[in-house]
Length: 308
Image (cartoon, rainbow, N blue to C red; front, side, top):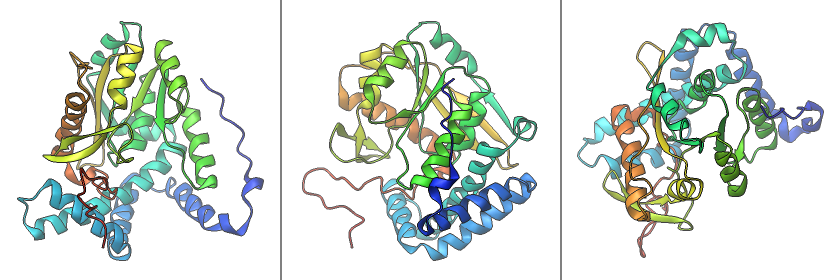
């Protein structure tokens, strides 16, 4: 396992870091509370943020209009509120995943389909775990690490240096390594060494290395990186989803490795990965990251729907 670099708080004592320290302290203190109380506080915080962060509320409303045009306006508003609640609960989940003890966490989840991952690993070429930006992402990674050796998430470092230092230090204690999304050479090398690499292609990073593939029937800028990694490494792709149940527990599902992937057709492969993520979003729509500007890049001269 990759050794976690030493975290030196003295590097972050300037006043500009004080708000981040307060937020991290709240997360750390939240871990001391009973789990059911954390869920209740997260839901309450989500209601507060729903009213305070109007810009992100508008982003979520636009996204849902694109994806669920048949939904009545009142139902969409309720779903937006539920999305804020799920996103706020994920803050408490993050604290639990970074600082929670095994005795508290292990009874909170179940995992299904682990045999599919094990079957894929027998090919000896590593495995690409195809994930999505579900609000349960952080804590589900902690759960998965209990079962998977050589687990290496691909991520984009946070802009906030203090938050990034704490986040990466906490994650490195649980995972074999962290992979910078911009370092494709290391990602491919580690796949060829038999590592299990987690990747989520469902964010809008512009037109570069993207195609406009359907997501909920909407042409959406979709990264072609999943198929590219699979082609260059020979690693099978295993879809992976996670969700929070009504009782506050979690379920992780692993599906059989994709057959005939990559196909050589970038658009078809991107559409296929979008369909897989869409299936889980339809299952629990409130637990998807609707606060991200998923449809910012548009084909042709179509303007961004988020511009006012």
